[in-house]
Length: 127
View: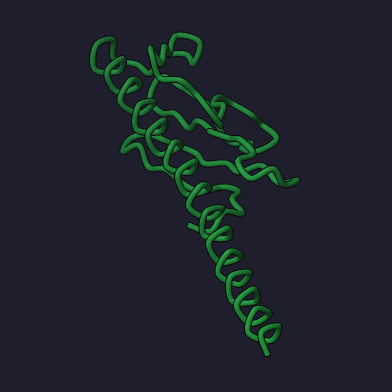
């Protein structure tokens, strides 16, 4: 009888551990996804400041993120992910990309003028 009770206890504990581990993975991915939103807001802010001061959007090489440390993402003009990404004097569309969940797929978002709209281009993370 004790073996049956211990078996049931172990089964319940195993099930709870599975649920906890799965939730931990999902919340970790959500936290990494939130970094892209912070980066997109910062890029939009820097682009708009330059346009207000000089009348045109800057070349990407002129953008300095300052102390913003990138943990999971890169940004720029990756044409394989976003063929229509570009910066002109009057508009911009920049791609932010990275593989945050170690699968074969790149997770990517674009940020574009005039309102800094962040659009998910490729993402297999459940938000």
